[in-house]
Amino acid sequence: MLTRLVDDVEPLSVDSALLRHLQASSAPAVQSGIGMSIGIEGPTHRVYRVIDIDNLIEAIEVFEMLQVLGFTIDGGREENGRVLQRVFRATSAELSVTST
Image (cartoon, rainbow, N blue to C red; front, side):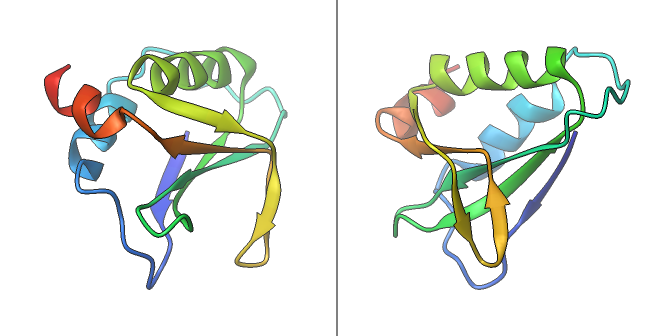
């Protein structure tokens, strides 16, 4: 899994905590060729973080973790010239990420 910030887009105030959760992922670092990109929306409803996932186990783990933290999943879209298969939007994530 690779993750990066999008230039000039305001991140969520809990981004550093979210990043710690992502880095704690226990999925094996094995590429299976699924090549999925997901986005995390910031407070301005623009994607500020992109997460590139290369295997199905990691995708499932990241999706579940984001939903447990209070993010809702939305369909894919193109943003900043990049196709995102899914976008996660903060709902109660501001509270869940910091308290987990």
